Image (cartoon, rainbow, N blue to C red; front, top):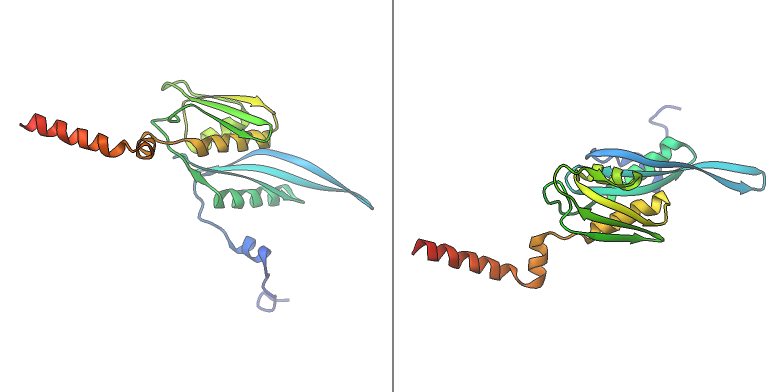
Length: 190
C-alpha cells in the first residue's frame, strides 16, 4: 500500500500526529512510573510520565502523559505541557515574594533568596525552578511527597506570584506614584 492510498487519520490522533509545535525552551522528564491494569486475561503494563517544559525566562508548563510505551507517554506529556504553559514574574534571578502553593495533600513554601544562594529545593520543585530560569530561591515541601502533587503545588505557587507593578495597579497606587514622580521632577527643574 503506497502513501497516497492510505487514509488520513481522523479525530484526536490526527491532531496529535500533525501538531508539532515549535520547540520553545527545554523539556525535562521528572518522573516515569510503570502502571499495571489487571484485566480478565492477566495484567496490562503501561507508563505514566511527568514532564516539565520551560523557556528559562518565567514561562513554564507541566503535564502528565500516559501510554503503553515510555517515549509515547513522554511525547504526550510534552505536547500537553507546551499547550498549557503559564508566565509569572521574575525579579532578578528570584521570585518577587514569599508564597505557599497547595495541590491535593501537597504544599510547597517558596521564599526569595539573595543572589548567589542557588536553588534550595526538593527534586521535583528544583527541576521546575531550573526550567523556569529561577537561580536563587528557598523552597520547602510541606505535606505529601507524591512527585506529581508536589510539582503541581509548585505550579499553583507560580500562579499566585505578582509583580510590584501589578500589586500597585490592583491597589490603585500606580497613578499616585507616577504623579509624585512628575511633581519631584518639576520641583528639581524649578
